[in-house]
Image (cartoon, rainbow, N blue to C red; front, side):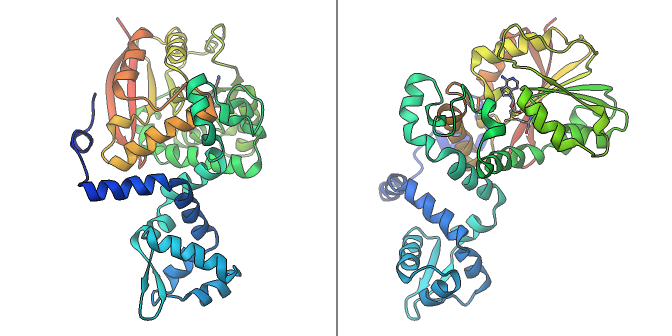
Length: 367
Ligand SMILES: C[S@@+](CC[C@H](N)C(=O)[O-])C[C@H]1O[C@@H](n2cnc3c(N)ncnc32)[C@H](O)[C@@H]1O
């Protein structure tokens, strides 16, 4: 395994002494409700208020400010106290924000994850075992009867869509500027954005290079959303959409143009290993020897920090229970193997792109 140094250290030996380990195991066993306490302390504005009132607030003041009953306020505060989200001055009974509370409040990545986990994943993970056993997104059923979440994205309830897109955009948006340099978007004439979703990367491309043309291929429903999203924006006339289901082995990549860059961002993790090989093989058929496929992925073993690797391996279980039942956040060995099976080779890997720990794998046809 290609674990980055920090991860190698963290994952090859015991991290905790027995007492700490037992404490962690208790935390895990109460994980679902601790998660809800965190979310509600944000939702009711309690963490925000405590951040404003550095001198602290007592329970009555919090109750009055939130409109919650004394009972509800007390339950939330006591649960937050014992999980170190807040601290208390035992002489005055005033609560103050602890460091964990501050990160819950201010860390935008944590906020995107909380919304995603509550609105998209929470109920679906209840049947994670069935999803793992059947290789099907059994947890998607309460939203609708689609084979994968992607066919249903445009019809999910508004709040669920907001959190799904918030999560997706949070992770990829921050990487786009660096990515534009790596793919030399200023020299490209026509870029194919595979799984380009609502066109956010395409918009950045047409802003960055005033003559580039971008074609997005995605599911037909997403092409509709994309066209709505880019309508009226500068350069929108250079963004084109091709609706297609790339899981259909018969669907060939668009070959009406010569694409000098084929771009796949956070796309391949939506598919099983077998499906990825098939997609890459078809992409390779439209690739000239001088052109490249750029794959941007968050490979979990190429992270510098344990929480990043943990978030990615947990995201795999969103794919299991909600998205499609058979894809995941891959590691370097898995991805390399699939790229080779598709008749491609990796020319270079750029790591630490953006703030989400993306890597860009530059692939060319095997000679
Ligand atoms: C996680 S999103 C990535 C979006 C964007 N590239 C980014 O970096 O934010 C995956 C995209 O793949 C598309 N997709 C999923 N299954 C597909 C399929 N079978 N055929 C074509 N596109 C698909 C989804 O509709 C979605 O737009």
